[in-house]
Length: 439
Image (cartoon, rainbow, N blue to C red; front, top):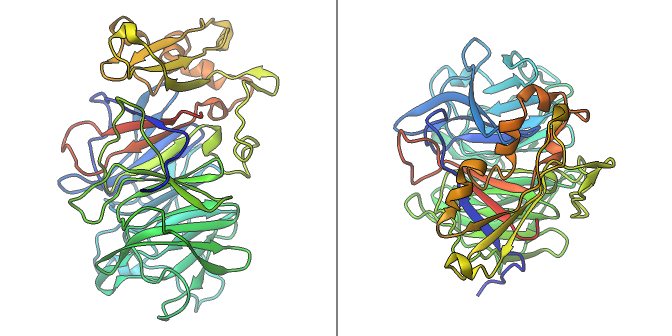
């Protein structure tokens, strides 16, 4: 039996309105400044739409994805955020055209438009990465590290590239020679960045699923094989995110038709794996080829957040009250008719932006029945907690005029799982929230 984490989690499905992306899989998503961006993927065919989700306002907005600098339909591509820009790579349908260009696209978040920003190599002989699918991309320092992927007729690749954001120059860190130390050819794996290192798990090597676990040190430029005896089984199509001093790994499966709902936690300090239990009445979805992204202070990289490494989330930031603070824990709410009920305790600020007032609230939620009917209109669903209170009393302009100008640092800690198979066709995108009880 695998070790179980001391902090169980609560899963909540978040029904979406018709004004949202359709359900999909093999898409790409990332979060930046309190917003979640989602691009492309598949439903019945390849998709090329581009959306932004505001967690504070609980609203989807479709963004422009047309023009010479914008990508076409993409699937199994990557998308990362860095200093106000989104960097999208790969995922094109293979053709003679794709072999003639480096499939890199850049979106300027402030200007809300796609911009020409082709990678420039340090010398004419230096190559740029070709189109691929199912690769991984992470940000380490001021570079994007891109590993593996399925390349046209060649199959799984073990190419390891770095894109310097400052110069937009590509460099090949590890090439194709067989037998060199490292993960080897790989696609449909997961990768995260933590303290100048990249951690890569599982995926497909050719047609075989893997469960190996690797660390790349960007300082020493060395691969290290990490122990995984007590960790997840063979997986492909899973996703991962960094949470405090741990990596959370969710879903995937040993084949396309066997999605799993397991959530694993790897502690970088102790180098140990543990499976995260779910609270009674809370069930995680079976998902494969989905996306996950974390929001809140504990999901920020430890270099950008003073709270991620310590695990502390003070109510005061710079001497001011945080607009969000939430926690969930089992509570014996027998009067609700369920011993497995879960209490969600929510604190709103005693003021809102623009001198508008929000009242303090504490809502009780029955895990089997969802939100209590009398409060459902007020708070909507577990994702938004107080967000609906913000939305009803404060305008977007009020939020933008907030003195510290950064709502992202006030968000509660939550992991969003978007899309994935099984897919519900033209229905709104599948969206789940996971909250750890230690949050």
